[in-house]
Image (cartoon, rainbow, N blue to C red):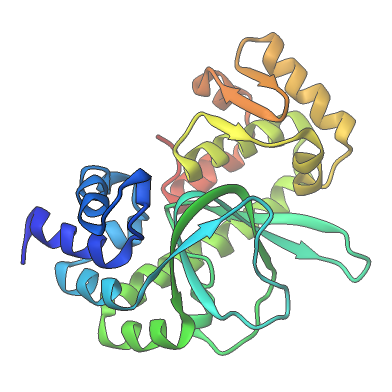
Length: 263
């Protein structure tokens, strides 16, 4: 089974009948084949043999904003492959203070570490921007990773992306100002979601960057005055990514090198 026929089989097995407003599984599959480029990159780039296995065990999952995929020091039950939206990996203190250490979108998988080790989650994973995707139980994903080296490598790459972002984030917090960090953060959000429209409030961004809300508002106002973004009622519209890039700190380029960011 090759080409569109195989992809239609994969989508028909995986997607609910109402996907994108379709009335039957076949209609959903036909639509999904046309939009295959928007699928999670791990699934999209998988071999036909692996895609067939994934279609057999994966389930569609809705990912509303604020949904917690797993808690810090908690058990990870599912490996989630976002097609849309953005997952934020957040480190927590005992007092409840939070700092975002990394993010992924359709370029990775949340919970990949659970396939590679039995350790508990080292951070919280929550949906920062709403979306949808597919999920596989951890125990099933482990079996698949043993049988398919390409899946294991893809999950290792995804986990390395998170770890490298975490390291770079620590450097960024210690050495760069809010304006350049905010610019870098917007670009990374854009890369993860593959869209120029981001549903994010100043308060939420401030929590992720561990700065005062007023500092984020000032940085956003400056970008808007320069014509680089438009902000209204919790929605940021990126108008000039190159201009934002010029303001961002060097950490964005570092993440570009290790994580394939940028578009």
